[in-house]
Image (cartoon, rainbow, N blue to C red; front, side):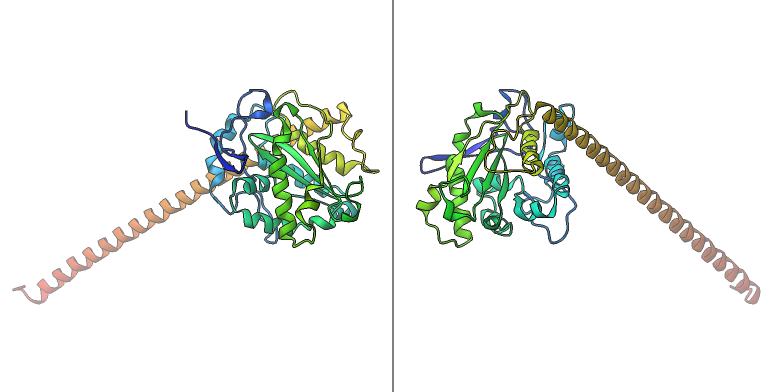
Length: 327
């Protein structure tokens, strides 16, 4: 079987590059593979690039087969549905939160750690204005598993070391995957964000920003992607959100309703995709029919012209024979 990962060593750290078509999933306790594919969405011309758009514009067709294999498992979430649902969540929050919060594309962290278009990723992140936000949500899909990194109060550098100052939360719905292994990647990621923003803070200051691993609900199946959406949803819906997150995610009934909502949303998107595909095929068929009709008409016209020309030639020959008997 062909290898699904390659490792690149940098010092004592290793960065494993996940195969976005079929990867071994750490998030599911040795359960079947997860399909991960970038989002394909209709966005405005001013929107920031999404995922691997800059790398492979034909990537969607490469993942069709693997996506079809996962349709029966409603808990498996690819990045296309993830991004569409997150955009939907974002539309429902008020303007105040929309200006105080931001989120990254779900493939930017993966692109950064794998070295794909790294400079562009940092440029796109700069446009998110991390240091003017209260919370920035960074979905991480790497090694076949979803996590959520939350950057808190990065602009409040005077309060470093307190709950009101810069903090990082890594929310993982399956801690048996050892989320601390992401620590070195996250530290480099944050250091490069500071550097790209040309901040005055030095590396020593950055190293003091605490990376915390709060207790969050744990998954029972393949729903790590849905949990990441749920964690973001809880932040967005909490009306009195302070810096204590211990009670933020502890409503099992709310979680189950949210999970079912994502399932329904996914089914609707699949129906839309099927309808679009059907319409596209119908249009191709109609275009083909139109082409055949034009071709048939052209052939008929050519045959008619040939017959007229032949008739004219015969008539001309007959007329000449009457005028000149020796013809």
